[in-house]
Image (cartoon, rainbow, N blue to C red; front, top):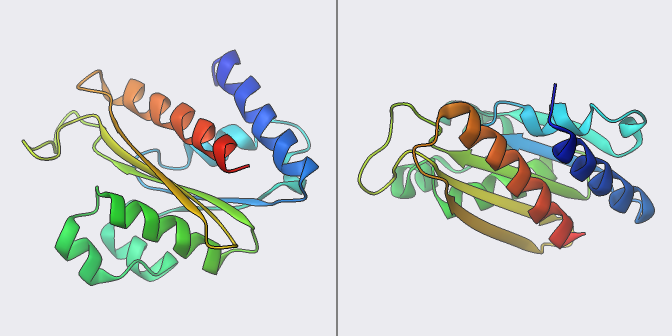
Length: 162
């Protein structure tokens, strides 16, 4: 289902988290659960993957993981503040020590001059309060490719926080 390079990357993330006794939760918008799906593709992942939140709509971001409505109103769903709030909200609503969150414009529609197709914000958070953020501009390369590149970038950012 997933390319071998992404499966290997997911296995590395799981091995690192397992070695440190950390559980992972995901909060996904534009990837619609692909990160959790990739992590759980690996046999034995249940000791590391705690849960996944698919918070595709703004209402889901607000209701399920506690992203402040005012934050979305001020910055838009595809923004650094919202990605960080998603990662931090997932920490509060899961029994995990590490989270990854993604929000973006996968296309083919929905892009604007300020937030073009291929713009993705990724945030990872630790229970200790440490967070990291990356912005990616993958371009209008097709919905599936934007989503897969987001999955890869999210796992690489998780490794940085591990």
